[in-house]
Length: 416
Image (cartoon, rainbow, N blue to C red; front, side, top):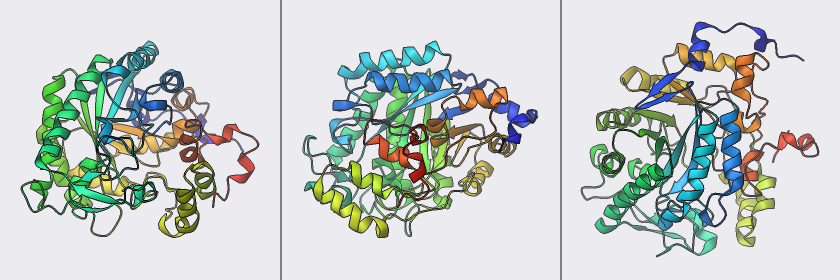
């Protein structure tokens, strides 16, 4: 069946999505951002040619800006050993990546994050995970890292310094923007979540105190990079579980970040350690996850507990829109809409609703030329089926769309 939506003329709102736009000090060629999705292309924590080619392909496909996923600000900030760690040794490789993206007319951002108490990396210095409060680290249970220890004041200051140092290195590597990861249950998200941050000192309790570390990181990074680099904060609209962060506090977090001078907020949701598929609406690729897991006990845990622990969420287009509208009504700074944006009609609606940018992930993994195809009228929606097998591929040989594999595609309708 032909996709008739691809043949309709551009509305004024859809045309706005493809027009040049300002993000802080940056001029982007359009309002479409490839969001950070872990690529699985950093063996030994260093950028590979595969990673460079991946982002070059996205730039050539027409996005305004692509985002390199999860640059750990220190070895202790890695979730696992193969994640990119932003240290001086990786700057030349990252410079090759940013040069390649720029050659295709796009901008490029680096996501900076710290895992906090969510880690299975036994190679890190002092490997026992540290977060805002003591607790259980279910992610590292089978790796002998079952407990989360509370960060000391020295640990907190070290995190702030590490973000600033990593930010300076990112500038040296030629990045145009930095995305500070305050979402998805990583350290700064743990700090903001009332269910995880149970501190009774000046760094926990009410929202103002839970905001103290994220705002200190924003301030330190801005001081480190100056005004010529765009700062985007990725925040949760909701943690997705009872007792976690909800949209009412997300609004207040947005207001605080606006006052702190971030250039945009990218609105997301979910907590990887508790609601891993809250962000990845669609199928649950358990068979693939079991197949790529290297640790025998972890493989067994996924097989036995996965069907009960990994709740699924049906895919809906624009699935964060209702919550995002509440931030749009409360904030003046640019907002990036994420979640289920797969078609020209979705872009049109996002612009009509007053969002400044849109962020796409799986839709672009499935179809890197999607934006060019939209503009040319040769496609009306992404071919992505929301099977989430690309999540499995991250841990195999690097993220890719399995629809490219004719032998795999017949099995994708029921990933469980």
